Length: 319
Image (cartoon, rainbow, N blue to C red; front, side, top):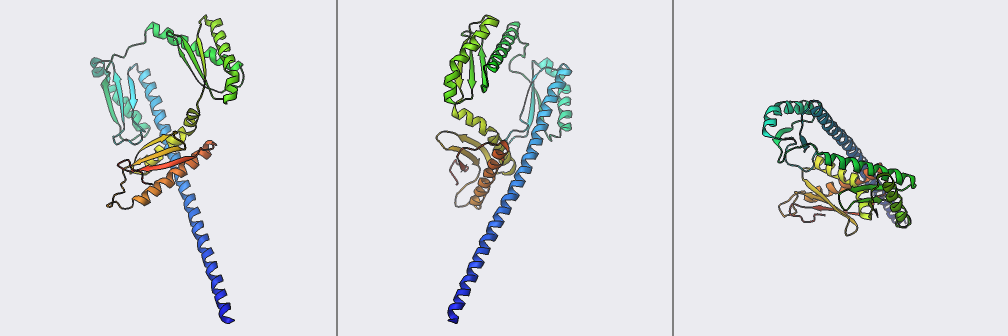
């Protein structure tokens, strides 16, 4: 009898120990998950401040060049992700004479702005453009003015037509003249309003500008809608993995075939001589999944099903 009681007590104690261990492990995992979430949120806030500094820099640069009468087109790689090159900003001017006369002043303006916006080391270049930077012709100015007027008429007409979600409007004023309106609505609503919208916009433009413009009304595809929804999430994945993992070298995604494939490219190898690859892959997976959770909650959107794929240095799947 005593033996049976002893076995029963031992079994009960074993069960209690197992429950405690499971609870402890679960609690530890929860704490780790919460710590990771806080770390990623902090990193994302830091990234947004950096992006804001870059946007402000570009605006100030455009403004200062304009105020000083300096002409040129500029391109920048500051803030580019997955780039092995140092960040740079390039100003393209119209000819060698203009470059020789203004290069020093242009570089001084850029360097002062780079310093004031705390952008770090930036390679500043002034180059002669491949083609002349010319003022738009009078014909080009008239064409641009007409396009803006047509867009204003279309927007106003669509506003009067009711609560129609318009994603884009494009105009071609060269022959054949046409306007394409893309809306974000259900297939049923799209079919019911398409003809009416075409007629309304056509008649409004004809009445005000006397132009017989072909009007096309299209519906944004499911893929385009998903692309718009996921774009800020994709951007965060690229920024945060580039910033926090030296092994991550690129990013890709595909909506076809379903489910959505999110592909993280790395320099990792799964050869026999590789150590820690499995752990690193798991770390990247967990990090990306947490980014998706955070951004989807922030944007108040329901994410579609997805498959996360980690690829190695030879394009091989590691997970």
